[in-house]
Length: 473
Image (cartoon, rainbow, N blue to C red):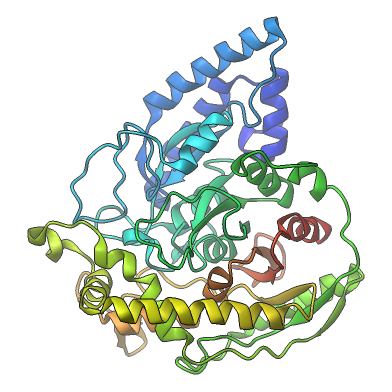
């Protein structure tokens, strides 16, 4: 057998179910990798090794009993995972990436952890996130930043950046993330993974307090489409019909795919995609054409009121977060700025923004419906250096955030220019997938990963996974 971490999640599942591997063996192997790799990677905030080993022993005992009784094992029996530190796991502190919160252990599992524990997973701990999941990079004031396994000077993205780094580095076989504006797809693209944002309401979110626009949804981060399909199947309660894994094994029909560089942020924040982003798009187009799909240009018109309305809805939750007044100074500059603005905003302004976003959803999905799928780059820039978003321009370098309090608006603008094609998918409630089709070094695993994003209509999660598998991922 290959090293355990080199197995796909599907192969690991099969080895655990057959008894070729015990849950204790798998758990010990991945905990050893976390111990060796996390000090330089910063993927985990909290490692729950003792609890994981107890859970693994219980899983092995359960397998023995099931073998005697003939009872079926849970779908993800014995597979180690990690939860991003916005997710409550019973008995473990949920930091939300913030030094401003009191560090208390969660009394019960959140919806996401409960669903996956019921499916048989073993939690190894909690992964690095930005404060309250607000940013496209996973850096905060309570733990070292999450770094990109392919270039440790670069960020792993956000907000599921710690989980993406852990999967890409083989510290866990796959991981759940949550996505309210790109938080699964951005780190997937930065770390060379398949990242799926399901459509609104398909899986339990349970991550975000204060999400008036219903932006946040949980989804898988994985090395392959099949692994993502396996995890998605466990996330969807009572998924009807064939499993996502079974669906992914079949070729998709010939599709009409619209290719677009249009973004709802381009009026507020004019940007030019990096050559590497355009190379990834061209690579994606070539792969999809070779697979038999029909590609054409898609000119999408976005209402220029979008940036203000989205920002209002996106930051509403941090305005209502329960933070003791004496601890507000411990917030990062971006969080503190957006919290103050959210608290100063009237309820009428929030309602107006939510009404606009509902109309934006209607208008945008009507345009997308001219094609089976919409194709964009996943990111407009290569993975950014750690500290880049929170740094001031200064000659050829930058000042680290520790030395410069930062400009929240400049930080936010950089994020929107880095990932200009993600948040509108959350507003529309549609499924989308990031696929790592390109590497700046020319071959898989060399240089930095760059991806494409495919956006589908409601209910197309299986189709998106099929296409990713068809392209060899």
